[in-house]
Length: 309
Image (cartoon, rainbow, N blue to C red; front, side, top):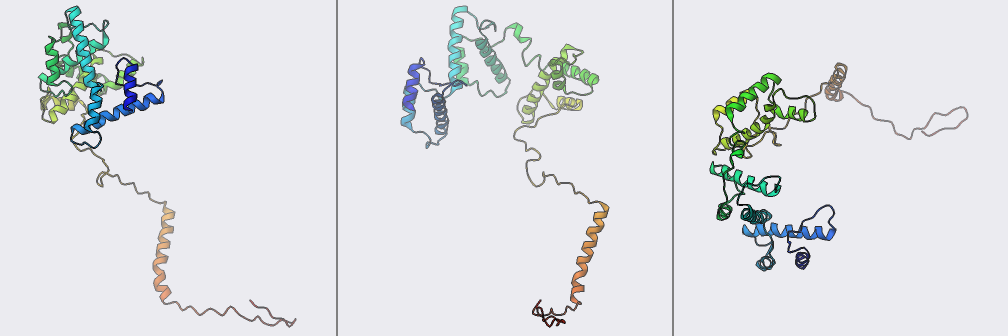
C-alpha cells in the first residue's frame, strides 16, 4: 500500500490525503482506508502504544510528506491562502461572496480566539496556531459590522432575550421555540414578532454556558439567570460527566405492570389452588386397592370359548 500511495501522489499533484466519494473505485477506497489506519496507528504511537506502527514506517511516510492530522493540514493551507490574500488586498476581512471558504476560516478563528480570551476551552486553536497567525499580522478583532452580531454580544444579550422569551411564552404558552420555528419554515403560520426567530440562538448559547457553569468553568450565566430561565420552562442538558437516569441498572429498570385476570378466571385459579392444597391429606387417607393382573381369563360363554383381555 505504501507504493500505491507513492503512485497516487505522483498522479494527483502531490496529494496524499486520498479523498473518496461515491464515484471512487474500490482500489481508491481501499487505499483511503489504509491511509486512515496509519493516522490512527500514529495516534496510538504518540500515546506510547508502539505495536501498531514502527519508527521505520513513520520515517518512510514522513519522507513522502504524509499528512498525520488532516485538521492541521487544512489549517496550514488556509493560513498560506490568507497570507497570499492579504498580500494582494492588504486586509483580512474577506467578503463571503468573494471567497466563502476563506471567509468562514477567518470567522472561525476569530470566534475561537474571543472564546479563549474569555476562558472557554478552545482545543482547535492552540497557542502555536495563534503564533502562526500573529506572524502574518492577522487582526483578531471583528470589524464593526460584525461586532454587532457576535455571539458574545447579541446572542447573549440576556436582559433583552429573556424579556423576549417571556413575551413568547405569554403568547404561545410554552418556550419550545424550535417547534414553532420548524412550522414557520414550512409556511405554517408566521411569528407575531420577527425577533422570535432569534430565540433558538439565545437558548442554544444559554445551554452551552450552563454546561460551563455546572462544571465550574468561566461562564456568562450564573445561578440567578439559571433560575429565571428554569422558571420560564427552559430545559437543561446535563454535562457529560453527570450520570444519566435509566442506564440499565437494577434501580432504573421499570417493572412491568401486573395484569389482573378477569374475576371468573380468578375464581377458577383459586379453586384449582384449593384442590391442590387439599390433595396431600386426601391422598394420605385414601386406600387404593391393588390393580388386577392383566392376564384375566374371561368368563366362558355358551359357545364354550374364552377370550384373553
